[in-house]
Length: 343
Ligand SMILES: [Zn+2]
Image: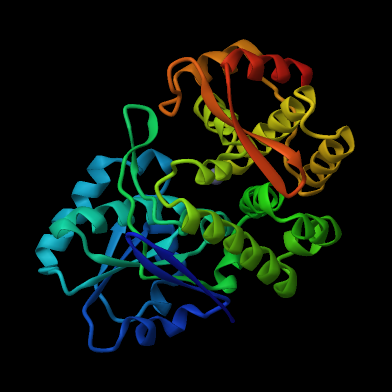
């Protein structure tokens, strides 16, 4: 088991990588009241391994990452008599962690929460860093808070039930972490991407631990996204826009976003062509898409609707080499031109 710690202004998190779900009760404390928030799919798979705490089940999927689902959780908390001494344990993927995190951080002005992310994407990204939130009016994560979970428990056994597609999607975030901040890890992934796809325990443990380390380092320097934390958005400006207008999942959209960001980095003279080629090769070997299959003009329209744009300029994450990111302002038109290159 690998034990990492994140210390933030909104609390400290223990990140327990490779710890089994069955150890939850001792982590929470046997005397303490707790409530599990999960979704219907995760409940079907793991309800029998849950400790004997009450369970709040929400409908699955990004389309339910909204305020009506939060209201449903509040109502159940009220019925259960949840008070400020209770701990909320979210068991599931990114949507469950985001919605339960938001409900817990607002109910009674904030309850403690622990995360048990069951997807690779959530283990390496969504469950870490203290951001939560729900979508509103078609905007992703428009309503939310910053609040660090007390713990994040990553049990690799839960990854075995994932379809290959979901493993690939998670690996997009792993590759992102290496590309922005950990060059040796990028080399490790180039050698071990097959083993990661097969969920080989040693390879996946290293991939999860090193991605978490990258995120923890960045978040502990900039919890509220004033600068440094923006680097975690590598591939995401375009990725979020693509998710809105296509059927791509998060990892696939981010993979294309990273390919466009790398191309832009080369165009700006920041990144060597060989480095771009290594990134593209690794993404392809992970089974992720690297070319745009929609019109660059529709991408342009979606980009301009992004809530994170500041006036006309947007903060954009470039690479100066594999393992090093730089954030600079850019006009959306430049992104669209690079997208033309990739068709
Ligand atoms: Zn992401």
